[in-house]
Length: 201
Image 1 (cartoon, rainbow, N blue to C red):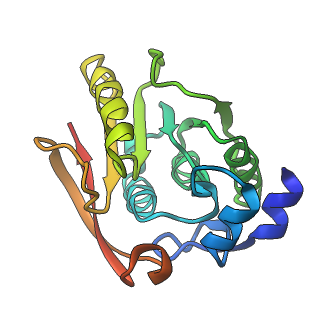
Image 2: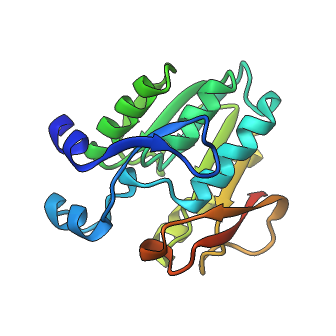
């Protein structure tokens, strides 16, 4: 897995958070075919929701400093790396084993320490102070599982923040925290900039 992630990506600055470098692929379609997975290689790109959330955390480090942070559906680990740089005690979670490899490589490249927890946490009750999720409302089934998990954490007293670039299944009724114009690859998003909002319940 390490060989695949290294061979398919190169380390480069993230557009909205250039202080973070991320192993990024040039061609999502080709890489997706290589992996043979039914899901896109979410770990190989800085998706818009993650970029906005990472920028927000870096600009407001008091949100995470010294606190236990869970980055849900971490993908590349961008948000987890940002939270660790801001002083959080970070756990990155993703169901894709390749994501775990990418997160480890990206954490090392950015000289941060974090814990990687693989697998599906959506039926668990994690003990965390801050729950971060970038771009998790991209389809109906995922949204139906993720929102109750996030709201349950909120009701237990965790700070919950979501980065969302106007995906169709972002729930209504959440509170806008900040909005960012995020540079994105046109082949992935169909546009060069996507307006992305950080939300809280």
